[in-house]
Image 1 (cartoon, rainbow, N blue to C red):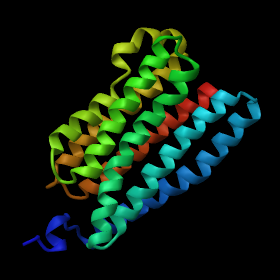
Image 2 (tube, rainbow, N blue to C red; image 1 turned 90 degrees about the vertical axis):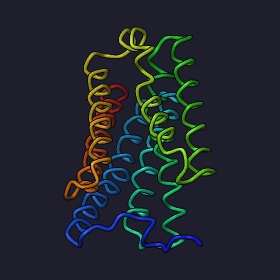
Image 3 (cartoon, rainbow, N blue to C red; image 1 turned 45 degrees about the horizontal axis):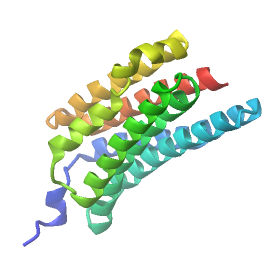
Length: 217
């Protein structure tokens, strides 16, 4: 017998749900308005490859924040369970999308193409895992998240050579905030842990957004 819907999802107080709704509202607005403004600014520069790669990044950003809002604010039920799968999958798309503008434009070949291929391969493996095997292999999924997120470490030399120092530091800072947020996410007894975790995701996304903006506008 399948467990009831309410047993599949964490239970939060009304105040915690409201706090999480505020964070997600800010995130969706940031993705739509900030992403649109960034894409328009990059388009104005006139570099087709940069514009296409930043579009991939903006699409990943909007997908992650939008699906997260849908999943976390939906009531328990079959739709929420499906949204959970997609939510966990699009995090991988966001990670790979965040690498794409830098890997294909600023990191010298062959390192840039190798980095892009490696991060997207890892991300696609994660997407398949989360969509095909929901609620299974959770530790493997976490390892894949961290592996994709820190894929820059093996290529740190070429990335440092191709990226302005403040762009590289913004990327590293975003990765640190994401990683610290993972610890908060796992601390389920911490009051408001879900809202804090999502606020840290939003902060990390803002740092990576700033890195893209500095590098391409």
